[in-house]
Length: 326
Figure 1 (cartoon, rainbow, N blue to C red):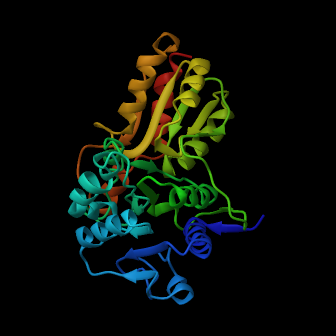
Figure 2 (cartoon, rainbow, N blue to C red):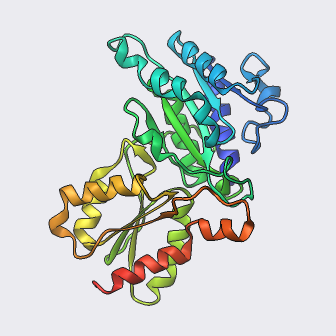
Figure 3 (cartoon, rainbow, N blue to C red):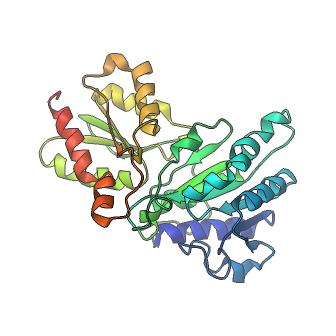
């Protein structure tokens, strides 16, 4: 099978959905001629024209609000917010409008729109362009939250998001845009709420998201040579969350690590840990451990930024703590 980068896979999903459905259109800053800050929309302006690929002013609240209105009238907008940090200037439109309208109108109004954005530190972009607070949106009823970790998942999950009648926050990762992987040329979808078992194991379950999936798989490969087998699960969507797959794995291994690049405090780590504590505590043979970012702004200093980012060493340290319970 041919290989595409994560960015190319998202681009292809947008192109195929725009070809199949004239209601799908794009809005965002520099997404037209420039092709988006990470070139995800490159070439789409030439293919579909300015009526369907709209460069917007620097006014997130304005164009996200416009997308909510367009979705309510039957269109299927896909909005790009350059960095998740910038969603903070359009929270009213996301939290009070995009997420709520279906409920406030008794189900008679729909908001079939997708808000694409990204997380992740490591590019020296400092504290206002590097945050990973995707868990915030999991906390908001009415939103679906998608977190693809591979080019294959990125294409299939984005198509599902565009076809869904509910509002979706589609959270990409900056460090993944250039990674390559096999992606089918045909149109396909991946259901929401269905995790992927990335690696089978019998000693410790690791639930990992985004780039933490790849970091965990590298650690799992190393540890397998030492006789420690990690079972690695990628939830792929955080809302809805595939609780069954996570619980079944913990019931088998008796041990759990949750690895996500967001800050640990009130992160998705805590939600998954609470799920297991509530529904599978009798199977646990060790404390649940969390791997994530510290509770500080992302440093601009490159050495400090590297310390800030949770990586393979942090995962190894967590596994080492649990080896005492094997």
